[in-house]
Length: 115
Image (cartoon, rainbow, N blue to C red; front, side, top):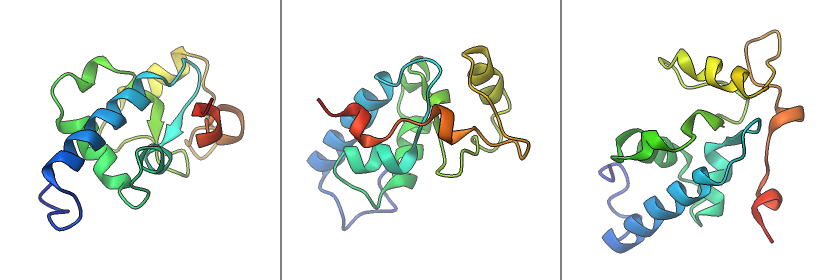
């Protein structure tokens, strides 16, 4: 999971990052989405949005979380996961004509996670 960032995080930091990512994703409410970048920033590593995706893909048990509520900054769903759109639509998430999530209506931002 961490081979792309060997000089950026210690093993302990990587474990903390993983735990933070999973905790943040678990809090995304139905009908809302957030981005890989927002999650990375909340976890304290704003330049590691791709690592958020890898964490969700390769961490055992992550599939039990609402990972379908995580999209890229333009609202694009994950490539190769056709069911993601169906899951989001079932929660009332709307899409623009270009196939991206309507981020103005459904996106959570960091401030939404802060007390």
